[in-house]
Length: 133
Image 1 (cartoon, rainbow, N blue to C red):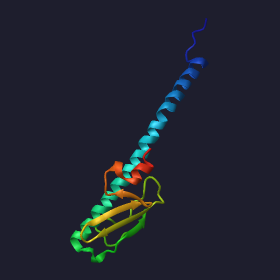
Image 2 (image 1 turned 180 degrees about the horizontal axis):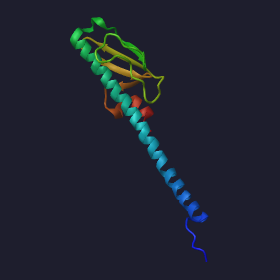
Image 3 (image 1 turned 180 degrees about the vertical axis):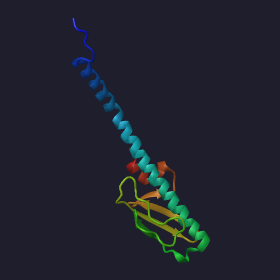
Image 4 (image 1 turned 60 degrees about the vertical axis):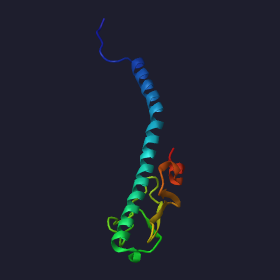
């Protein structure tokens, strides 16, 4: 008898089947993780936008800004320290930002695609509820 090395076809098929089952079980978890990261990034961007606008209001007053501010991801932002361009939404790059503010309260609301992303905790925000799967 010859001494053969390597794997038989049956062994290879079994290994491929086990890998397919593992991928089938893990892929949905991975996709949820990626989606959660995108939503959380948008929420953090909204907080940074609000902080930049509140800083500008505190330093220079509201006279240099008009409310509301609108912008889409990548568009230039004028007159706000620390915010040169609008961040692109990670959930959908075409979503536009809208920020409302006043002299007394600073930023009162940030929306992304007309869904509230600031202020509030994640569980109470419309954007989070609609996009977090």
